[in-house]
Length: 148
Image (cartoon, rainbow, N blue to C red; front, side, top):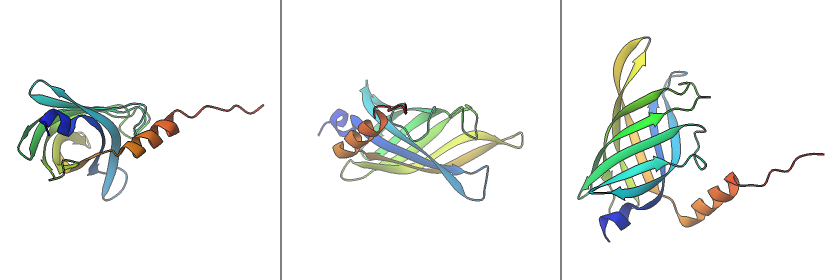
């Protein structure tokens, strides 16, 4: 399987980050498309299929055997606790032997109480089965029925 065929398509993307509201972590989730771009790949979230409304994720990466290395940029949801802030960073992930799951770590800069800090967390990207894609598309595009 060519590298382009290995990654092209729809993927479910989620990452964990330190919570501002409680001890522990929160999760951001996206449905995303991965497409080849020259010798690299681009992951971009699909706004009409995401779990995080109004947010957008873009990542560029290269692949060396099973090592996936790249950079990411996220515009957070205007309605969320980060009020539409933009964050960016880098990541390194490992591709599993079935080429359907990529797991690793991200890192990026953020502020806590006005002080810049380096954050890191888990990141997982998994190929979306066709039935999940169809289900999400139906859910997002339900006809609206107005009460009389």
